[in-house]
Image (tube, rainbow, N blue to C red; front, side, top):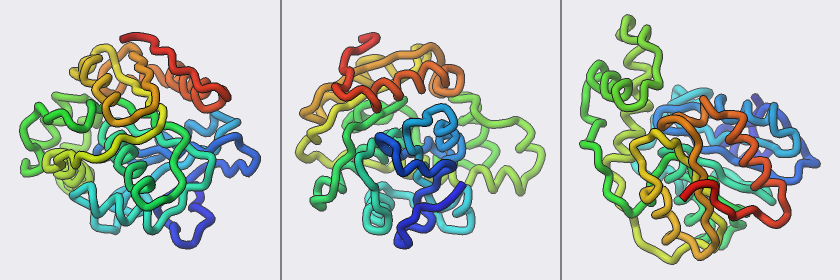
Length: 259
């Protein structure tokens, strides 16, 4: 993967394929504890799109940096140090959806270019109260057990090596502190189309996902795909098909698949 050409953003933005002639750029925000490699590889299957990952401190190529534990300073640093070259869209999964939304708000508030649309995955409307108890204060083994019980997204083998477990849990803990302590700051709605995605077997209900509609004056479409919280791994081809249609259709398709 290579860094963004803007020297002011040497580590925030990474990609596998530079495509100067691409119709649009897609900037992807990962889930709690996640790195961007999973998302930038989408560029292999979206040849018409230049796919970038937003690499947060404390993971991937920025493992040696202290992770953020609150939304506001993270987003402020991102929009001050990185530039999003248009036309572009944001995709965010779980925590990444919240960060994509807050980044769009920060760009709007600073008078900077806005994304063409937001693609928001597996996260409820940001004004809704979090239903799970706080997790960021848990020890490594306890936090791992909760993540596995809720999402089943980590390899069991890491519990056999305390140093590896601590390394893996550090960004998860920082991100859960973001999630556990964040309180929505009311403000004017965005003026963007919102395309919301979720897994039909996730604990989030269609109503939770549709609650995003109050946060933009633009249209909202809701797409449910088979699977749980990480449906996007099981349904990668189907999701990328939706993204291709949304990003490359001149008149954006706002028809929901399931409501």
